[in-house]
Image (cartoon, rainbow, N blue to C red; front, side, top):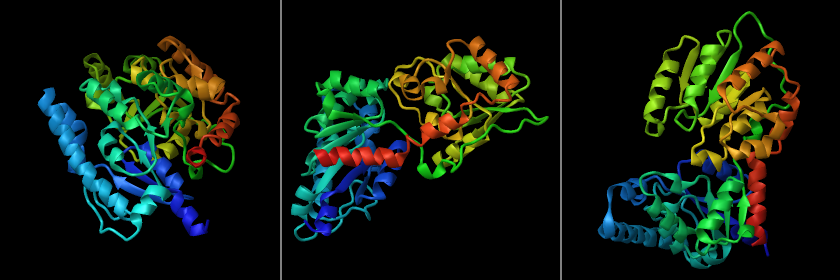
Length: 386
């Protein structure tokens, strides 16, 4: 096999959606493997996905949705099969001009990577081995879990392998769809290797100004906002920074009061949404990180991007029970507290230690084992074996 043929054989046709985990993994894969990206964010694709499932009910809605999905999938599938690249396509429904002999290349030199259940129809039309990257529990949605479950079942049926961001999600997929556990590879989130400092971080030198505690990522009821309020109130010597957007649709009624209280507090600063890589860099400015997960189902089997950013920064990390992967991957490098008083006590202890718990280097070293480059290597190795 020539180098050119080998390169074609390894090409990944990725149906890409707007998700940090998907984007970062594909970027890492692109460093050593050809990637054909099929954007899944056009207005048509949106209708086929969440919008369609939200607004249609009954047999008519299901049949109409499947008919439209099949139509777009057929057009897009033929286009991908007949061309060597969709890199110039603007949406999932845009088809480049076909090339001679491309059908053979598509059938034998490529693999499909789907990234959400609503891509089931399109993925089924592509004449190449199929893989699925499950970055979230999409059936946890409150608006159409049965339909999402059906789409997810169609997607995984016939997959050569599935990649799940956590062992909990992998187990759930096995139970739902009868997938043998050995067909699912756990591929957690990670941190960009180029954003990890070349030398182990050290604690910040404390001056007369207040130290900074930080909460990175989106704010919603997936976090214990009531506990955060208690912590802020009990630590007048501490500044708090919240870096991330507010998911209004994910806020329980009772939590809106706690969030308003935090937003109006003089020692709390809300930075708003930031690009993913800025979040990773922002972590380095904190003295201590707080990850107060609630007991919502999606948390339990999730993979927290913020964990890996905090590990790279080295600072102490406080968390609550609610996300199994935190303990599975970080263990004693994260302090888990099961009530707000324990979190406050730990903050007081860290204050006396000048936020130096002796674990900065250990966290930094662990972060280097969890980079997107390494995740891409596991992905490539898995599909190569199959």
